[in-house]
Amino acid sequence: MKADYLSQAFVRALAYSQCPLSSKPSLPAHNTSGALSFLPASLPFAPVSLSSSASGNPFSQLASDAPVPERTDAALEANVINPHARRPTFNKDLKVHASHRKELDLNSVATCPVPGVISCTDEAQSTTACCVQKPGGVLLHVQLWDIGIGLPDSWGIHGLWPDLCNGGYDESSDGDGRAYSAQQISSVLANSGTDGQSLVDFMNQVWLSNDDSPSEFWAHEWKTHGVRVSTLDPSCFNDYQPAQEVPLFFETVVNLFRQLDTYRMLATAGITPSNSKTYALADLQNAVEQGSGYVPDFVCKGSQLSQVEYYLRAQGPVQDGNFVQSHPTRNSNCPDEGIEYPVKYPDGQQGGQSARSGGERGGESSRQGEHHEERGPHHDRHGHHERRY
Image: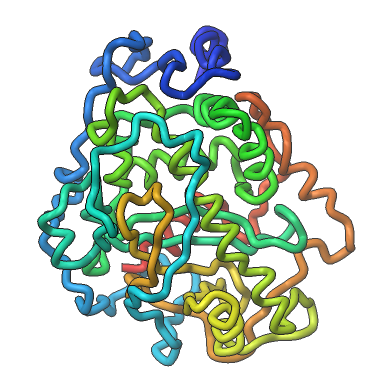
């Protein structure tokens, strides 16, 4: 985006600091001509209907026992699908709670049933999409293990992706009219109350890309997946203000990541990064199950760990942070044995991490480090790992 636009666009965004979210000036939004214009604070953001997505999938494919398709994407990085891998199953008693700050509970959504309705159930069909996630009722929380990126003793965040209940996927290619820029995303987050900058600082440590600046990665995840969280649709809010839902999404994902601390759970079981040891898939899954109750899928590039995926359903609005374990919507591809979990910084230096974290304060962004060609850019991995069928 051009610098002259950015210099003007964030005069208002910078005014967000130290004032309630509900009273903050509005951000620029896309108009029909493709140009950007400011929305007056008194003018509500045009509601977006997620039920008529480009995929054309109606919310009629709800059965929790729907078969997982067996076909795979030919572009999958590792042409191995492990039919022996243990898979997660729907379990409404297996819960994880990852709520956001109370200060972000302004202009709340319409009154919803208590207890919340679980996505991908028959009851969800008759419940408004403001109160239950649909059509993408399976929420895939994905974490990354990248060499030379991020903290040496932590996995990284890839995102939270809504999948259809029957195993398809639901994503946006254009942001559904809410494709905020990288600088807009980081500014909104940094100014979302007293803890906003702390949220950005934490994300700069754990939510990093290997080919973009952190905020560009966040903007991509928001545009592609965040806008498809139906309970964050602008029409669900009372007195909606543009970008009001953005902090709710990112803080929910971050707190979910904190609850599902993959590195800690593996380390507790004696599974730590090594350039000489290899591990069995069953041991990896057992370690996470022992630590959280959840059975995850691990994704490999060849025999090397690349991602971990937690299948969830939301109980009530996604931003309430109440999740239960879901059935899987994608295939598992790590081998049974010989899985490599390499050290992030083999030489003991963390220079790559410091080059890729930080520098996203209050909307400022910078290119972060060199491109890691051997792993493939995250946007490419997004296309290959994510599109397994």
